[in-house]
Image 1: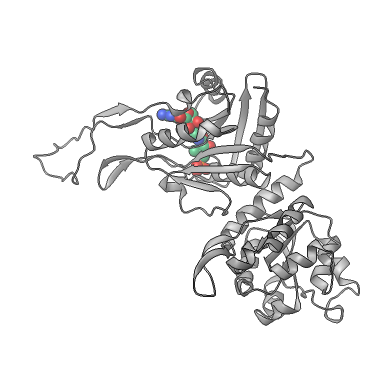
Image 2: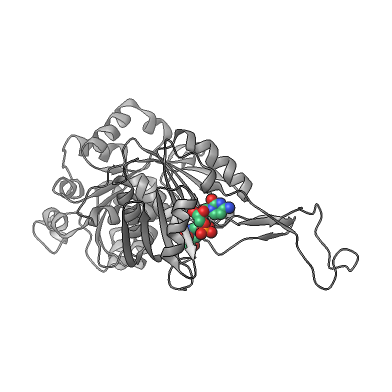
Length: 403
Ligand code: PMT
């Protein structure tokens, strides 16, 4: 998913540096070409040799060991995307003030491509006004700064300061790579966007349910692109989407069935500027949920077991449309565009993303999709591409809709 992208990973000296070789591997596995720069303090936690083995390229640490005599500029000119991870309070402060007292920081100063900063430090250092001022300044200067996660710190107690997991950072990298490849700027600063993802689970009894093949990948891609474009994002996700990594700034609401999803969406839409219903909602649910596991016993069920189903509420159709821009999907196996256009009108949405789910290479569970965006004014076909690219196109088209 990062094929052909040149990524430079700048490692500064925090304990989370020990996790970076694994993160570098995941970037390489996703198709990126990776080079690494290290501050002297980072070398206290992990050796340059580890990165050299993984990336097959010398680490930028001093002029004498790098192939180019002006190494810091060479690396800055080579990269498409820079990542400072873990970003210590010290390195953040230096970057804000343009202090380039090591090769890694000098190279970051020379970098004019998108840069993702992933701070990790003790919670009290994170909360310090100086750190917060520096974070604000870096954001104003155009850096993409991830929030640290809350959790167990190296100091042995809980707090906000942990480096997000590698898979979470990877989601941010994919979203940022997508945003930075586009000619048009996507700026969602100040917008509140609510996105649903995954397949609802309608209980039959305590161990069985009715569901579908939705993995949540499409909804998560939209959530990450929106968050990296500056939106405040709430993700309402079903169990099938809970294994997917999510960056800490995305607010999570976990639901299981259509009724819980409806409650969450109806609540969240009140304050939202945009709602995206990417979740695959079961149209029907069992009329009754058995309290105990239904046994294969002739007194309870016969040879053909008939489940009595009742209709679920249509969440999308029932959402208020006065304030938020409302976007739905249409998962179709035939007459895709015709059915999507009918859904646009019937459900009162501002946009429907028509999704051909008869193909196994797109739609459910895949990393790629091909869709047609249908609005009341316009139609845009998107050939097969990554779900992150589709997410960008949906959000970009949404910007052009006049409410
Ligand atoms: O999650 P992935 O594995 O990445 O797969 C992505 C996807 C194929 C699930 C996604 O792209 C998609 O198409 N989602 C919508 C699936 C769906 O329920 O489609 P539908 O045509 O049945 O419903 C139309 C719209 O109404 C959808 O926005 C749906 O969320 C909404 N709906 C449906 C039924 C219902 N009772 N309430 C609803 O709000």
